[in-house]
Image 1 (cartoon, rainbow, N blue to C red):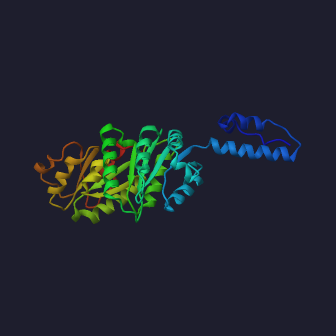
Image 2: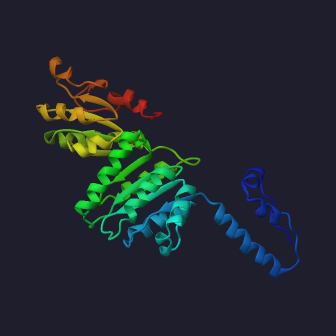
Image 3: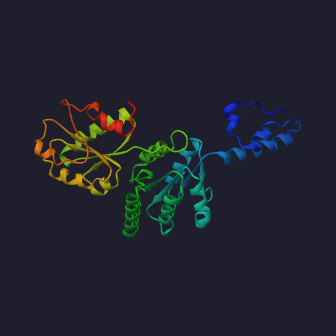
Length: 301
């Protein structure tokens, strides 16, 4: 009995020991069975790995299932491994992506692990704030310090934070990060707006998501969100615009301004500095209104 012949592309990706097994002939069912077991173990070890952080919430199992279905090996496999710093650091160093859960922990090691993965993980670090787990003042302050260090180091493109009650967004962020061969930076686009423009902005964000596949964060004028976002579209609609123009100064990433009709006075537009000013061309928003900015972010549409 022999193993089925493999195509050239598959053979090129095999561990040498798996390839040797593929060339081996045997008439023994026991021998064949043991080689299948060994081959499966080796293939599992050859899978690209994702580090999945510590939590007792069942959210971890949901993320584990999603990653496993996508063909990734999730590490660590044993909860006891989180207590071994050397093991945790090794897993992060080997991983394409590191995912951490924050909220409700009684130990410092989750925050320590986030700092380690920012230094050692070959891909991105994604932090998820667990639903129904309020952060302590200490946790929130530590996380703010970590994110400030990330921003100052210029590594913001390798970090994402997903807020509570948004597991679907977390899973989409992971898919974006893992899409293609190895690692693809996710497009992190936020929209900032004044409260009176919120219904219109929701429609605009949905239109952009539908056309581009980007995940759009609705910031309102949350300065903490604007500070950490890599890309922000500031929307100026029916609101007076005073608070919006002030919020512009807090953006540290790439930004653009979408001005809805009727056109705002030129003297106010001059205060929107640091990015292109895009005019909504009709009564209703069209993705073409912001196409130049979206193409700058990598949209190929």
